[in-house]
Amino acid sequence: MRTQVVIIGSGPSGLLLGQLLTNAGIDNVILDRVGKDYILGRVRAGVLEEGMVGMLDRAGAGGRMHREGLPHEGFSLAFDGRDHRIDLFGLTGKRVMVYGQTELTHDLMDRREASGGVSVYETANVTPHDFDGDKPYVTHEKDGVTHRIDCDFIAGCDGYHGVSRKSVPQSALQTFERVYPFGWLGILADVPPVNHELIYANHPRGFALCSMRSQTRSRYYIQCALDEKIENWPDDRFYDELRRRLPAEHAGNMIVGPSFEKSIAPLRSFVAEPMRFGALFLVGDAAHIVPPTGAKGLNLAASDVHYLFDGLRAYYGEKSSAGIDAYSDRALKRVWRAVRFSWSMTTLMHRFPDTGEFGQKIQEAELDYLVGSQAASTALAENYVGLPY
Ligand code: FAS
Ligand code: PHB
Image (tube, rainbow, N blue to C red; front, side):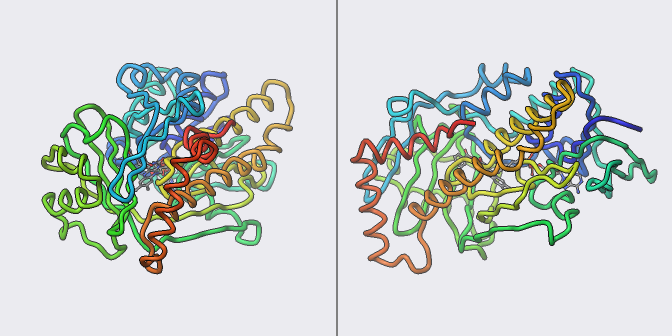
């Protein structure tokens, strides 16, 4: 078999790139080692930058998002028992869209199916070959048969644990990493959100986040130790701890109910450089990971796809390699700005082992300055709504 672009991974990166390529008449095949249901069963991001919204519209997959998504013009920072709203729209003229990654992935899968895009799920041993040569190809095993797909380019959209980055010689790759000494314990519950906008809370007991998926479905997180076990966190204990970390006005009117999803996610900052090796391009989580505090992970995948699609369209449309040659530098410039923002939000909002009482006062003083300064709030807001592509 032959195609122009093989995409490894059917998450948001792979599906978004695949749809833009298909819409542009550029042949592509998506391979994933798991099935659709498994991918749709993963609960992940919930906040979309305008850039991601625009990319979904460009892919022709934005309809349900506009119908069911929740445009948000601000969020709150809670600390020292008080609530402070960051007026995103007033400070930047931009909004964010609250719409779950699960829904977005579903919409992209539906769009791909409707446009006849070729995706192969539950395929094993996907392996990129000769991507530093002039005849790249990918092999994979399906139902005991090994298949070979010859191609021009390979897009490694296979996430942090994928095969693409691991296929690059270690000598050609430089990685940067910070692992945080805590995780996020998150639940999903069909109860009305405690607030109409998100609340990021700094508390001496630890960070908490009140988010949502709709007006009737809440997504709540509390910072937890890395060795925590879900079985030690029945819903009652979770809600009690969450309420202790929120200002009284919110704790008092929180509607609780049974969770139907509960998970612990570790937090890390990670960047692999460069993001291109000959015919192989690393996209999204395959190249970088950010702590979810800044709601940047999924949104960085969108800007990577934007840069790579631009390059591939110029390659096939105008026989120009300028775009694909510039991909890694263009993508990494925005990646590092988002990595910095996510690191700074995580450092400001979480309780570290060495924070102590002095460190808590410093965090509260920084937050107090931030919410009281138009300049500081604007800097926070423009990073949160998403820096330009
Ligand atoms: P993904 O990991 O989504 O997709 C990669 C795909 O590649 C998967 O379907 C996988 O099956 C496939 N794959 C992997 N190895 C393969 C192989 N060898 N062969 C074939 N296929 C292979 N971001 C936010 O903005 N906010 C959040 O709150 C947030 N929470 C998160 C919580 C968790 C637990 C995790 C892991 C991530 C979270 N993220 C969050 C980040 C997340 O949303 C990612 O940024 C987003 O999924 C990136 O999409 P992809 O790059 O497509 O990678
Ligand atoms: C979520 O709704 O899952 C969410 C929202 C904002 C974040 C992280 C997670 O910063």
